[in-house]
Amino acid sequence: MLISGRGSNLQALVDAEARDELGGEIVVVISNKSEAFGLQRAKNAGIQTYVVSKRDYPIREEHDQRIVDILKDNQVDLVVLAGYMRVLTDVFISEFENRIINVHPALLPAFKGLDAQLQALDHGVRYSGCTTHFVNLEMDDGPIILQAVVPVQASDTGEVLADRILPEEHKILVDSVRLFCNGRLKVEGRKVLIREG
Image (cartoon, rainbow, N blue to C red; front, side, top):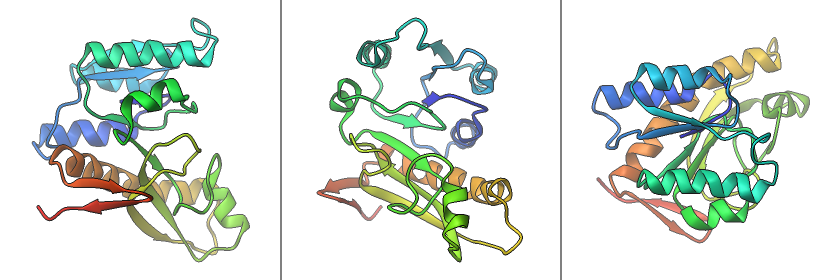
């Protein structure tokens, strides 16, 4: 798992693994920020952690190659981006094609990038939500795995809407990882097919 912040999505996956509901094992957590609280969450769960900072690897491709090397050393099959606030380069994506899952707090393909909840409110949408997708070279553009819908209320602020979306992020991220680990996801062009289990 790659994180940059508090690691609430990481915790959802850790909890699912503890309940034997994940279908896989979280073997390593990597952050680009040494102060990310998610690192402590990982340590509390007995998961090994690494920090790969921009300061130590200022060239993006070298930064990504260092992470790829760590992942390969740990024989990782799937990479999960859980609040990881860096855009991946081809160095990374080509090594894990259709094996990188991201969760985004909007109903893609709408409202890509940062501040998705505020973008949704600014556009006056009636429904927002979240999406899991496989990562490709375009930001928030890869084949969609799962989505969850959250109604928008007239009193919502970006922060309030984000807080209501977050539990749905946890659910669909856990479900998406479980589907991958159980061999039930197949990418065909822009679509992800979910095989019967």
